[in-house]
Each structure stands twice: as C-alpha cells, then as structure tokens.
Amino acid sequence: MTIQENVTGLQHLGIPAVDLKESIRWYTEVLGFENIEEKEIPGRCHAAFLKKGNLVLEIYQENEEAVREVASRSHGHMDHLALNVTDVKAAFEEMKKTGCTMLDTEIQSLPFFEKGVAWFTVLGPSGEKVEFNQFL
Image (cartoon, rainbow, N blue to C red; front, side, top):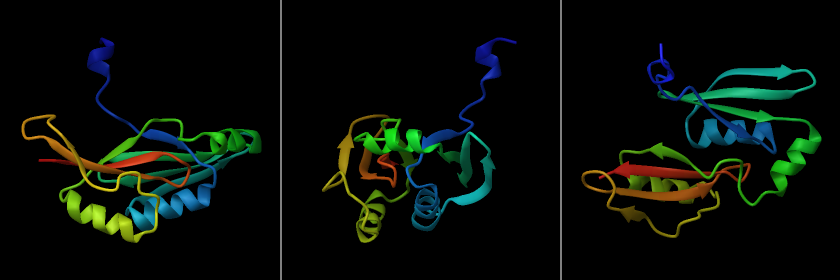
C-alpha cells in the first residue's frame, strides 16, 4: 500500500491553548463543538478532543513554558482554521455579537472554485485565526 492510498483524509487539527478551559468553552459554547474526550497526560499536557460534524480538533495545553511561548505569538501555531458555513452573512452577524475579536470588518470574497467563496475571520481564544467560509 502506498502512502497516497493509505492517507484517507484529515484526522484532526491540533491547536495549542493558552487557557484550555477557555478554549473548550469557546469552541463548544460559541461554535457548537462537542467535547468528545478530555485527558490529563502527566508530565506532558492536558488535551481535549472537540468534534463538529466530521471535523475533530485537539485543543491542548502544555507545561507553563510552552503556554508562555504560545501566548507570546501574535497568532497561534497555524495560520488559520477554516470552518464551512451555509450562510456567511448570518455567521458574520452572529460572531460579531459574541464579542470575539473580528479580524475582518466586512465579508471578503475571492473567485476560487466554480462560483467563488466568501469568508470572514475572527481570533480564537489562543490567538488562532478562525475563518468562516461559504462556497458561493
């Protein structure tokens, strides 16, 4: 079996957290993810796996030194996490009401794919960029 045959898709995305409890709260209460598993791994980290549809996030908090490193970055470890939405305008209005940091003051668009895409981006609780994206 080749690696191309063996890889079947995305298993999960790992996002380091500055405050694990706040990250879990934000992803579950604001975005509707379900906390499907949470464990403390002594000497390593505390991790939670959050699921929405077929997307799984591993949100984890490491030791104090690692937390300081994450907190000192202007953005999280990845550039952005893009979540598919069916109504980008409604999502934009709803996210403005949550009080999170909006990185876009209006909905953006580009001519990707057949009819284009529209999106906006907010900051997650550990500085990660979370994009809400609609195929047009």
